[in-house]
Amino acid sequence: MIRLRYSMFCVLVSGLLALGGAFADNHVPANVELAAEQVFTYRVLDEHSSLDPQVVEDTSGAEIVRDLFEGLMNQDSDGKLVPGVATGYTVNDDNTVYTFTLRDNAKWSNGDAVTAHDFVYAWQRAADPELASPYQWFVELMSLKNASAVIKGEASLDTLGVRAVDDATFEVTLSAPLPYFPQMTTHATTFPAPRAVIEKHGKSWTKPENIVSNGAYILTEHLPAERSVRERNPMYWDNDNTIIDKTISLVINDENVALTRFLAGELDRTEVPAGQFPRLQKEHPEEAISFPRLCNYYYTFNLSDSGPEAFKDVRVRQALALAVDRKIITANVLAGGQPEAYTFTPAAVAEFTPPTTEMAQMSQADRDAKAKVLLEEAGFGADNPLTFDMMYNTSEAHKKVAVAMSQMWKQKLGVKVNLSNMEWKVFLETRGNQNFELARGAWCGDYNEASTFLDLLDSESGYNDGKYNNAKLDELLENAKVSDNAAEIYTQIEDIIAEEMPVIPVYHYAGVYMMGSDVGNWPVGNVEQNWYSKNLYKIAQ
Image 1 (cartoon, rainbow, N blue to C red):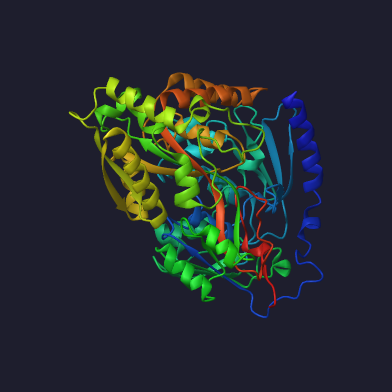
Image 2: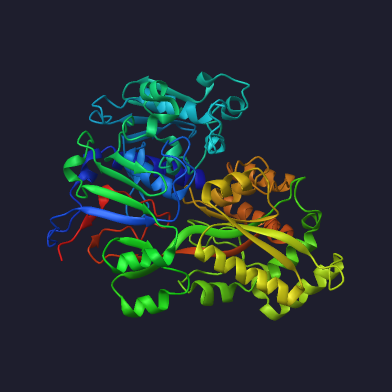
């Protein structure tokens, strides 16, 4: 049944997407008066990881990349697929071959045409062992034909399941049907790349003086760890319907400093500091907003050979997870509408309702009592306290959560925790190399389907930083990709996670922002928060 519905969906979507330009109508309501200056300025916590579509691995970097580059498909304000460079696509009878038709007016910022060859190059580049992209695993996750062999260096790049039929026709061949494949083409890893520019400038190709991009904006300024500026790209195919002229991202490490600058009128958007949403909502009801997001917040155990021996004992992991009072963290520490997390997958995900775990049904007092028993059974207590290091990236909110968790463990279980924080890029490298004991993790869905979270715990996942390895879970993940009842399999996977606790789910995200009342069309209905500056506008005050 699912495959049948999926086939019908593809026919309907293909028909709709073939309309192409019908979606390009101006997005400003007729009764709205636009501000004379169309500049959107927002705050980010850290310097982005990269502006290379095939290399970027963080949310703030992806936000910039979505403005600079455009893939086959985009998302609208509700997260639904709309045309990007592709005006539409068709799919064969067994849902393994997708053929995308590219618009004839898509251009690079230097005036060159965007062609199917640019997508072939980009997708092969993402899989190329020589690039060693941190998102290389995403290519395999897309079920591209021969992806695994190419990534391992066992097959040449030209055997990957991508082909330029001609300049305007991009063909993708999958190793097996994947119901959510079209959704994955909105991810930065799949965006086209300018081969000649990359070959000329190497790793410097994304600098403002070198970069050539095909999105609605071009990069005009980048001061590392300070600011990035993108301005309208006159070569963009839909530039006539773009309103925002300039978007500025400012790196401000301190949430409270950012709030002060927002209230002073220097920012159009910033995150609400932990615990301050109730007050700000009363004082600024038109600007303090909270809405569900497709993201989780967790701590991951290092279960690799370099990890602490204590964490190899499932009773220790369960005890630490049980003793975390999530209600205190969400209601008192954060206070922004974030739901408590007892599953890895957020409830905001489409077409899957995460199961109610045993832990979720217990009172906190019962959790605490069970945690104490488990830790004692594992050999830890007053005479032999459990001690470990807990690592997070620099942020006042992350610090408050880490302090709260460590105090809970100390008071309830006598556990001694050494807290450490690191700058974002150093943190990513340290965690990725398993040079940690317990480390903060967070994931925002690359597409709206449960597998975008659960695949992180596959033993081969590039973001399985704790190196958790469970053959049954791997098998279930593989089966889910071709199953007519993936939701049932995802429930089984969540049950394994709840039993083995390789990670500690803490809460699921909400978008908790201070947003200028003069910002129009922010996509609060898009739980992935894939926003595009070209869809925003500033309202006259």
